[in-house]
Amino acid sequence: MLLILYDGECPFCSHYVQRLHVQAHCGEVKLIDARLNDATAQFYWQQGYDLDEGMIALWDDRVYYGADAVNVLAQLADPDDVFNRLHRWLTAQPKMARLFYPLFKRARRLALALKGSGPLVRY
Image (tube, one colour):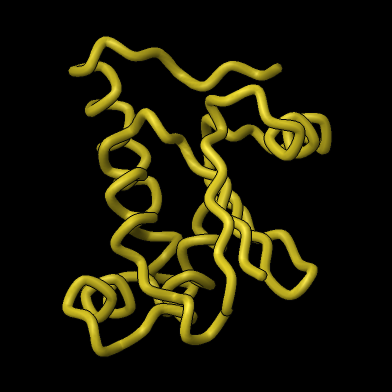
């Protein structure tokens, strides 16, 4: 099972996790909105992960955070989908994921500001 912990209020994040086709490689995919008072989100906050700074992908008993999460999701994505091909092209290499992830975070912050939403708050 693949678990993705993301900001459900961010339109980019929500669209991203909905468009990502990884079921063929992962089977069950569990999406968790980090804005909800969820035990999983609380657990990762307590482990020191700042969920306002990065999403989490839990795959194969390993935690991937931020750029590493986007990188592993790109590697798991179905290459037959146009969105996933673009995603793989941008972030399937670790260096590229680290290059683009700060831009994704800025876009997220801008989208949240335009919506009038604040940052994620630690529980």
